[in-house]
Image (cartoon, rainbow, N blue to C red; front, side, top):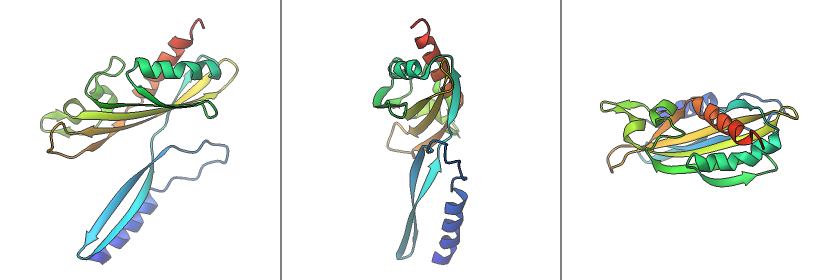
Length: 186
């Protein structure tokens, strides 16, 4: 029984390894999933680093102004700001156990958490989200805002399993639009 799992684990780790990147590229934002397999009396466990998809949107503002506006944008969207790093231009925020619209959009428009017989999971489960955005200069008057969304749908009862959600590019578009609006006239 154990011999069946070892090749599968090797293939899984190789399939999930990140492609090579240039030395100038910023380090990817990754998440670690812990997996465990059990075969009779022996346990096999491992970790897989899965890079999250980064969505980048242009902003018509200097990077310093865009970065200064980003924590306020996060707060306006209902996120609790959990990290601000001026050295890297990174702002991180989270929202826990929500079903409310985000930035005027239903969560089902922004997240794909799968579907049950009762409809989209994002409409029925509580959603935990961590959103990380990084501002980088493009020119003196423009910047890019790169955004990663990590979201998990949690059942509202003790029955069911949590489900990792796939975000839509609309998250990054929404944040970039709000940053642009916040920097106008300042």
